Length: 634
Image (tube, rainbow, N blue to C red):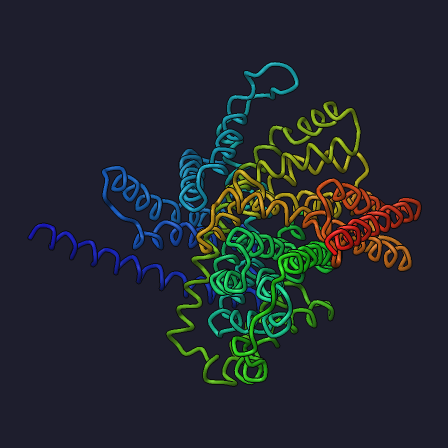
């Protein structure tokens, strides 16, 4: 009887939480749509209101899935409920005292400091609950350094700062929690997450997968190739490698296995393809907007620079899949399992229009915010063309709620990253780390890039892409700028390696998500994904040393560099899979293919000529060995 009453009370409580989340989510969604179309509030007010809603959603939304089986679970729920109240109120307090704060030129009262500390704690706790310990620990270490760094010896130490000074930077300015990361989340990111969710709800996700299958499904390794195409299209707007794996992998991985592709390889293909979606233009998983906000570089320039490296990444994966399929004698899907492309276009083809409009609006010079606003409206209205894509009131409310729940997973880490950025700005730690890296690398660009890569992969493990990029942009990018690397190139370098951490063991989260769907060994999948995504670890070096790949240089040099790089990634794929066109590549013969690939990727016509010669020699060597084996067998 007591258990029944407890369940009833629990059900009533969860129902209240559900309605609070729904009402707040719909309200803040409409607020963001309105401000995108008709103008945002001042930076601090816009971001504070956004953060208030995100803290509430982050705490209340997951409660229905939380199982209360141990005392610690009840403690955590109690803390969540407290944060769900004091967190949003402390964020709204910034709006309440905004004008008064300006009148007293930023001077804080005791109550302001206390509420500021409450907001910092709320952000830390919500980040821990949404993303786990890694980012939270980094933020706590940064805060500890800011508060206690005056006791450290030598250059690593800094002067003492009062609580008022620290709270002013962290809470009551746009250099901390309310900084550029949260600013991007409160404008561009939330809008494009809404666009992604609306496209999903109208069936565009399934349309992308079926189109990809129609293009590649009948070819050898067809389902794997369709996973590449679908993940590239859908991953660009999904903003999460894991979400992309789950969204497309539940369909593509079983199809791959059905055609004879091993479980680990199937899961790894999906993981690598889904991870690449985050640096695939035009949306680049929303991170392009944050990069534009933090660097001041126009969004369209970032997209143009990212295009060729993203294509090279997917081309190499495509080549590897083709080589694997040829080596293992795999075929495509039978005709009866292929989707009817005419039927697909008839039912859902109109839902590709909003994606095309993104390109059109950006090329016309619209800001990303305006482009997102008009594309979101277009998605909603175009959905009414057919019944199966039409969003009625209940589906619209579901889409708006799901959008904000997803956004909270970005906004909380962005706010937490703002704490780290604020600490580094206040203490000057960024310049100190830059000097340390330069001294360790002895001012060598290659060694600095290598150390930067390691930092990016380690920091990116288990951390959202946006958060890892933001930390790296403050900690590591200044070092690259000191060595003369252009700002855009430096930011793209750390951005790419922060992303590829999702397929880098031992914490290859995207690979592990794919392994779960494929019922494959997680560690084997992780190492296979690392091997398949090897180009992602080479391309960033290519565009640092040869900036033509990010569209910097004369048109002729850009074209020649792209052609050379495409040949390079093909040779890389031959070495990775041990199969060249129609000949098996013995283990030792793979080395010349790798060498030729790297030579083709190094800028300069001399290295290109040597690379072509080495690659041709390796290919004919494989042909000669194959012919001898056939002659001996005969």
